[in-house]
Length: 369
Image (cartoon, rainbow, N blue to C red; front, side, top):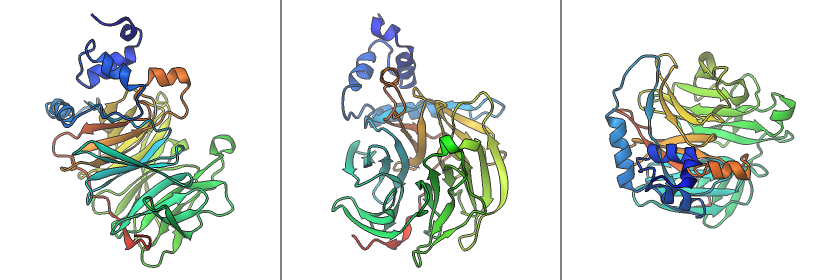
């Protein structure tokens, strides 16, 4: 018999069904996890089971996207989980809790996790060659950083004099860091003041590579071959693809997709897959979607039991698992109870032959290692 508390909370029923848990026997797992600071709620066996469900889906065409199933793999209670990136050398996923000022690490094979306190807000990061990181800090700009020793060495300012911070970013195939900004007051003033930049690995110079300014950079991703780059200014809700030259500016802006009038929120963080598809989180819209490399249409969809997925990254030993970060910083106390998966780390097995692309590291070694 379904418990009274579960019958009053239909979102838990949906989450239990999504994870393959019996709606009656699984409620204790769901409800008890809310009060824990960290809990590995999905074992490799659960992920494998979810993968079996996905693999049996027909890879059909047509107007309706194929629905994929996600499971929670780590209870990390992030305020604003963001910027996930899989380190293939370490076989581990790293990401930020921006508002919580933390760096996180999750090892899929062991389900072990680790967190480091950061000295200030960081909006993005990349792996340095041979170990260590470059962080996009709010006050210290772009800086080398060693989380174990807390050593920080500033490389350069980021948009000094503007009320902005570093936000979404990825390394290109040459190992240069392409990073966009975030206007801290864009929800109020709606001013296009931040830009898209490239930190060049050869000389650590920072150059602007887009010929217009915007409000909030997102969906930066390089498809295989790295001759193009995806980008979105989130408030516009439109995703574009540019021709990318590692020695020049972006060109040949091409429209990919725009959110419909019935969709809430906007495109957030993204990653490209081995077939050129773009997986992007719909912040405020309860889902992650994949855009076909052919026409930009949504061909796969991951519906989630929380309204604010923030970004995604493909990893795992076989590069066949999509990891999804989420946020809860804008939820009321009541909404946090209704959405216990908010702020946690989620994962979904990729269908068919779709795999991830190994993320390039910044092509210079950190002096702090």
